[in-house]
Image (cartoon, rainbow, N blue to C red; front, side, top):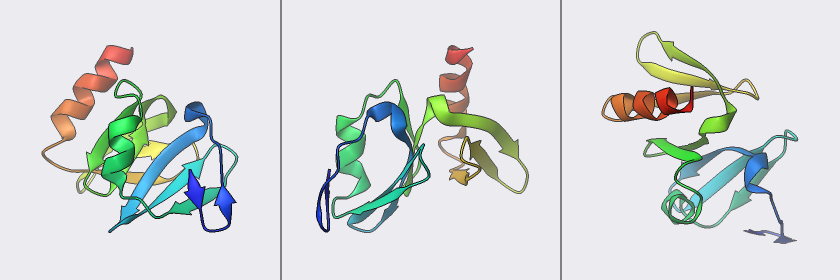
Length: 104
């Protein structure tokens, strides 16, 4: 993926989540690094494997294999293996739970 000062090559399995801010996306990885790229999250949603990544919200794309916990308090959230908390939109909650149930 192109970053400000070059190109970073990531293994899909190292990506924990991607957050969006307009036309920029931030990748969070298993080695606790983050990378800001100038492409929107929708472009990555198209190319990353659908069976491994799930769009929980307009601003969040997560690696479902890195989900640690589902949280139902004042909304819907997941805790990722790096400890980050990611929101699940109300309209995506049921689909997310179906996807997670197929993993177990």
